[in-house]
Image 1 (cartoon, rainbow, N blue to C red):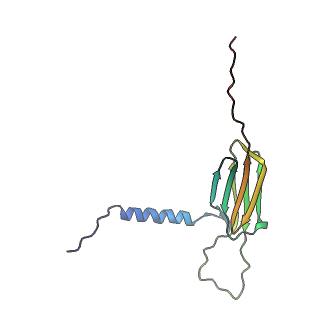
Image 2 (image 1 turned 180 degrees about the vertical axis):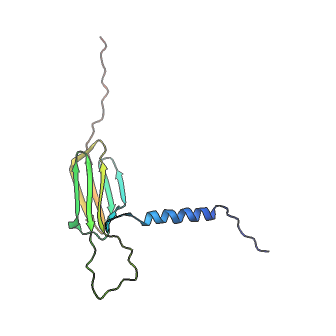
Image 3 (image 1 turned 90 degrees about the vertical axis):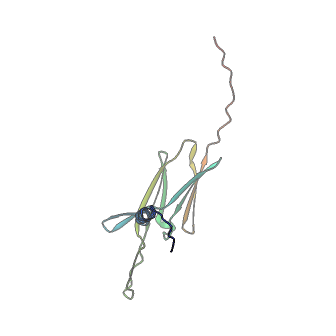
Length: 144
């Protein structure tokens, strides 16, 4: 007699995982043959700097644009498709091409005048300095 481990939620978990994978793999929406890409973003902060890192593989540095206006940081760019060569015939093509645009509202305390950006190995790293806040000193208020 063979014992089988009974897992009643296994099929449901597999189904849920497959649905999640479909949405994760489909990183954008199709709009008139242009794919809107959504680069993966990490935002971290320490005492002095807010750092935004975006995964943007396959995009040329000259095709990226970063702007800050009214406390909103916007990253936009385009991943261009290589020109098709007549000698190639595709069996499968899963790569996404097109333009993208992501915007983020900057938190209070970030100096939008002091911004630096570096693009290396498909990772865009944007650093924004934070205002140095003076330690609040206790002040006695005289009651009249």
